[in-house]
Image 1 (cartoon, rainbow, N blue to C red):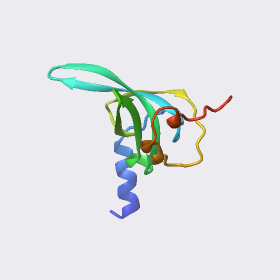
Image 2 (image 1 turned 135 degrees about the horizontal axis):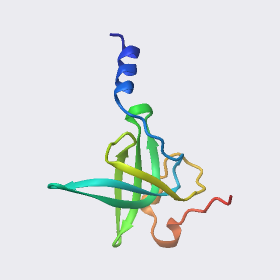
Image 3 (image 1 turned 90 degrees about the vertical axis):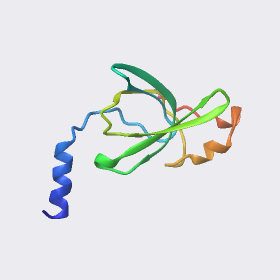
Image 4 (image 1 turned 60 degrees about the horizontal axis):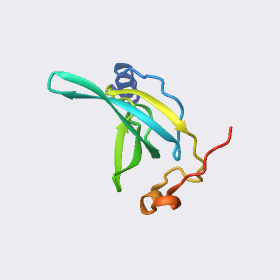
Length: 117
């Protein structure tokens, strides 16, 4: 099997689900499934998208939120079976594809301008 054939085979194995288009600077809520023993529940993670990385089945996105005066970042694979839904809360206006400078900002300086529709 050549490399393109192998990549096509792997892409056919994974189910591609449709999520809304979002980019760095958008505020989103990711609801993902957590298994605790035999029980399963859905937990929400709301924050600002710092980046989208990769393409196809290996694509990931990083979400950052402030929880109790501490910054928390989480990396989600876009093809994860544990992601239930992704909901866009606000569209942000940023001039970068990766907004890591947000890590060093606190309070009002960490605000992102909202896109007017």
